[in-house]
Length: 68
Ligand SMILES: [Cu+2]
Image (cartoon, rainbow, N blue to C red; front, top):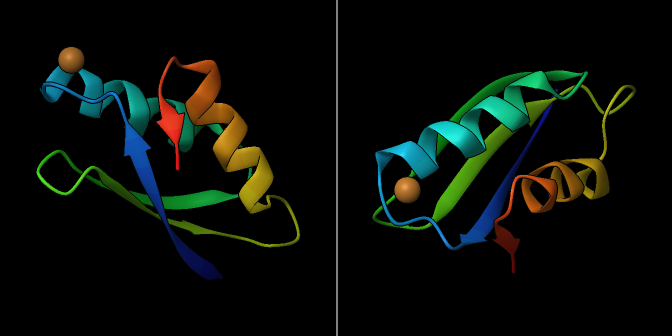
């Protein structure tokens, strides 16, 4: 497993946090997601065989948020 941190733009409330969490958790290979609204950050644990950082970024962007 690998862990990365994504800096997320556009989250304003806990609904946003849940949206980001959901799309990341739905991404195949993702085994753990922590999202901090205060820090605008998602910490994602994933299996590098099944997922890669570009896919995680795309999932967040497709949900309507930015990844720095
Ligand atoms: Cu929100």
